Image (cartoon, rainbow, N blue to C red; front, side, top):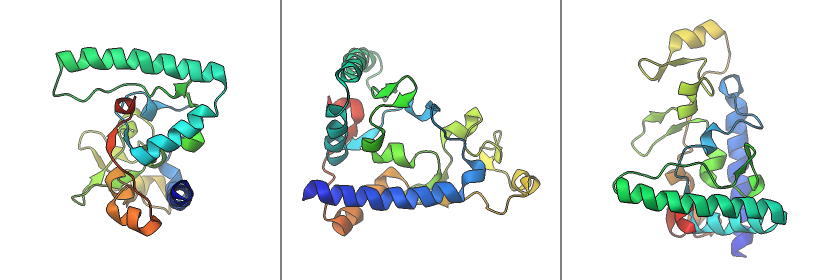
Length: 197
């Protein structure tokens, strides 16, 4: 029952996100093999997301599971070293489920993985441009790098009928108490992905 409710929630969120990405398609450069968002992060995951991720992991072929486990062991050692040197700084790393520049548990990935790439609205109502925009990817065609804002002038020059928009797709919103109540689920504790291992 709990898993069924989480799957219904994922279907709802995925449908919404697909519509948002489609709306913003003139600005989106995400494609298979592009893994910038998976190469340097700390990836927040709730207990529910992690449990679902493990279901996907257990369905992987043994040789892929072995690679993921090796990645995790390596990252745990690096994390310990990082915490000793920089105790107040987040441990940023490549996702252990990224194999050959592709997510090996794609259908079971977390909410942050599904929503990254859009301009989001944070809890204070401000827009947050995805970091990949500064690397020539999503929204780079309308980004003013010096000011770190979307350029109205660049947008007008592109002559695109869909304007660049921000959506309420922050991780905190998508895993909020409101979502829990709406779908009768409990996300549970939230940690960086590597901290679940």
